[in-house]
Length: 126
Image (cartoon, rainbow, N blue to C red; front, top):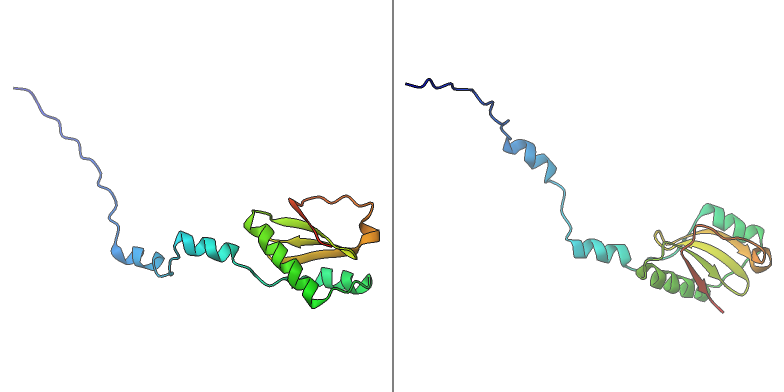
């Protein structure tokens, strides 16, 4: 007769339901809801730095121009642009399309011989 050897296999830890309940309290959004929130049009914000530059350099942009810039930035965002250079007749703006925030501003004369980095799109307005 052959001899049988039994080896004890340790059991897997037991997962208690009360531990799982804590992680599921947050409301879940569907992928479509998250996508729509990410690309929905937002009103432009002006950073403190950009606001100071606009004042220092005496750059005046009308409400209708800001609205037009906002539309174009939202359009760029839908196309996947994250950081854009916006060229206008009187100014050049660097805008985060991702955050809908004007990062900095300079007048066109100052922007003439500049090298712009870390942008992935340009919006030219006339």
